[in-house]
Length: 622
Image (cartoon, rainbow, N blue to C red; front, side):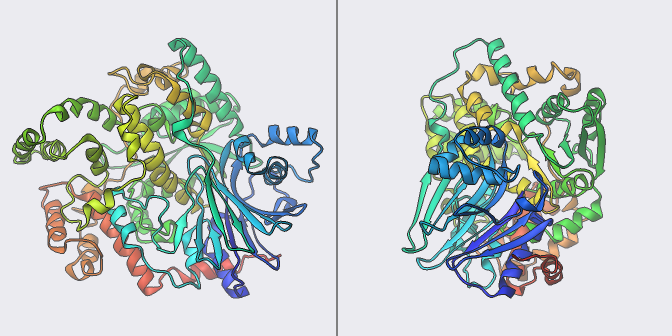
């Protein structure tokens, strides 16, 4: 895990130091810059594999220079293949293997890589850049291209330094719905995200930028699994064992995030097959209904791990909220980012790499909303006018759930309903609701050849997993120089999951059926006999109590005047509805708090100057 940077603009040394220092937390072990007559490449390194200085970046291999963020988990197999072709290696790093693979296979090298990555290679012979991002968007890559200058970075605040950028109001419209800014947009009009599973080439002589998709969820796999359920369990078990094993290779201490849920418990169980000295980490909440740490402890005790429980201290949580924009760069409203930051902070005190259970819900039909959608879908066979009548009746109920159901069945179709769910259903406080609902992946929701819940999962892989989960985990872990690896996001596992018959994953009663059956081979099923819980903060209660003054101060009428795209009167009403207990509005309030804080930081230029200066003092330049 690292931070990468590059530019054809010849910035001053002081500006370069500031750009590199801005994300020093992503790679505190070494910071270097490489100059050529055409381009400047920069890299902040978090040393994980081959800790020797010889693997510092920017890394030069023959006529190639590379900056790379992430890990190629199967690099040793690729290295052996390339060695047989005559390639010579001077390090034991995966960075060098990427360069050799690019020389051997060209852009097709991406099909050989199993990993999480964002990298850019400069070819001094052809005066071109070649860059790519992994299949599911684990690692970020932002770029700026105005036809003359080209600049790229791990985080957009690096590009913002010494450039006049404008806030993208359409990005804000989309943020209000999704809670994050979907690719390819960023919060800045002039800066884009390279989409997941895409590569690019940039010609430094002509200024031409070309982007290409190298992998597509919809086209892989090409055939459905035809074996029995037991055969599927056996094949999936072998895949997961390997996915975990290759992610446990590191020259630094490694542990596992263990929430006590199915996915992280399965990853922990499989990880214990490769080591007898595994450390696990979980978060403890004090609010009723949020704390799963006792279950995590039960799993850890059964598997014999060295378990660490991290207390979600209220005051520390508040401090993270107030400094949220320091690490997330863009407006980002997943409230579980706060406990993720806290978990990463204390996990990093013991280990440098942590495995996680991310992608189990998307890959194996785990979210409760999938089950709910399957239940309500028959209602959408009724004419819209009939659903409007039923919905209006339900909305008059004092029951919060009834109100939500009433709103849901009143929308025009299931596709719109699913997208609206991410915006909290009732969006009367947003001026341009329809503008934010647009998504290039809506076609995935309308695939008539697959069951509805599989369409929802495919959509989530392309959107929620990429834009929300991966952004949350990348920024939270990197904020404290911790590398997070996700075995369930191994592309082989996702492809296999999508090839399975639906009943192997969800038989109408049991969700994530096949994962659970594999887990129960290692951990007693009775530990998991409880409702599914999300990894969320108790903001509903905090906003009405401990944080009430904070909310009212930061979302006063004066402050709301500075937030674009909202109906101020209606926004004040929803804040009041929450404070009086009439309606749970914490998701909308959190979105507004995050955006308001971000806008104020931009206006005041209040990114911590001391934070940047201290990081700059640690930089080394080559």
